[in-house]
Amino acid sequence: MSSAWLTPALAYPATMASTSAPALERTARERAVASAADAAPDASAYWSISTTMRPGSLSMGSVQEANDIAAAVTDTATLGLEQATDIVARIQQKLVVAKAVGADREGINADISRMKADLGSLIDDSGFNGDNWLKVEAGGRPKVASLIASVTTGEDRSLSINMVDFDTARSTLVSRQDAQDGTLTRAYAGSTLGGVPYNYFLMDAGSREPVEAGAREIRLDSRTTRDEIDGMISSLNRVLIDMVGASAEVNTTRSQVTGGGLGVQAVQGTSELGVSRLVDSDLSEQAVRLMADKVQEQLQSSSLNMANVSMTSWLKI
Image (cartoon, rainbow, N blue to C red; front, side, top):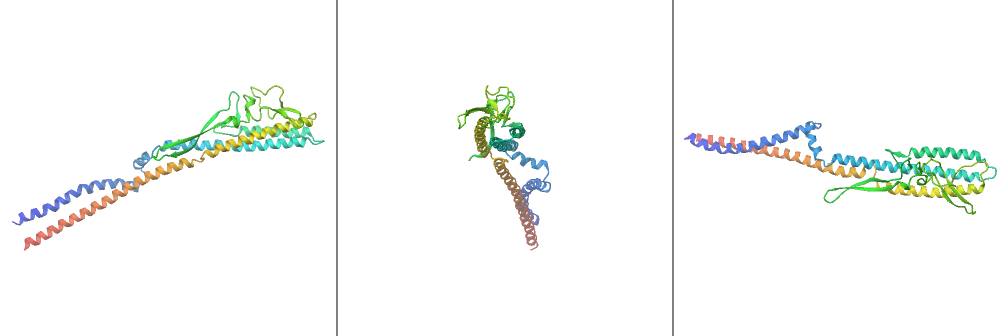
C-alpha cells in the first residue's frame, strides 16, 4: 500500500523536472558560446559573426578612402593655386618697379626668371595620388574629375553616394600640350590705358601647340620700353583675375567634399552601433534565460523534496 501511494506522489514532480532539464541544457549551451566570447574577445570564430553582420563594411571602407582622396586632391589644388597666385603677384610688383627711371631691368628680369622657375616647380608638386589639377602633360587635355563628395542614408536605411564634378580646365595653369589651355601659358591680348596694344604670356612650357604668332613671353632687358612694361602688367592683371576665379571654383568644390571621411564614418558608426546593440542584446537575453531556467529547476527540485517529505510523514502516520 505504501508503494502504491508513494509512486504517484513521486511521478508528478519528476515529470516537471524532466521538462525543465532540456531547456536548461539548451540555454546553458547557448550561454557557453556567449561566455567564451566574453572570455576571449579576440576569438575569430565569434567575432567573425558580428563582422559579417556589418553591412557593406568593405564597401564603406572603399568609399571612405575615395572620399579622403577627393579631399586631399582638392586641398592640394587649393593650396597650389594660392601659392602660385602669390608668386604671380610678386612678378607683377617686379614689373612695376622696373618702370622706375634708372631701374636695373636686367637684374629684375633675373629675379622674375627665378620666380618663374619656382612657379614651375610648385605647379609640378601640386598633385596628389597622380592627379594634378594645375597642369596638363603633353598629349593630354583638361578633364572633368568626378569626386565622392559624401554619403547619406535614406529613411529606409539605404546608402546614397553623392558625387561632385569639377572641370580642370578652370584650374589648369600650365599645359604642355596646348598652350591655350593653361592660364600661365596662354597669351592675353589687349590695349593698355594709354592705347598701346599688347599680347603677352607669362611662361613658355614648350607646349606642342604653342601660342599664336606675335605673342611674346613676359621678360625684361635693357631695351624694354615703359609702354611694353605697361602691357605686361595689364596681361598679368587678367592672369590674376583668372587665377582668383580658379581658386574660388576649387574652394566651392572642396566645400562639397566632406573630407577626412567624416560623413562616411558617421554612417558606418551608426551601422556598427546597431549591430553591437543587436549582439549585446542577444547575449543578455541568453543570460536572463539561463537564470530563469535555473530558478525553475531549483523550484521544481524544491517541490520534489517537499513532496517526498510530505509523503514520508503521511506514511509514518
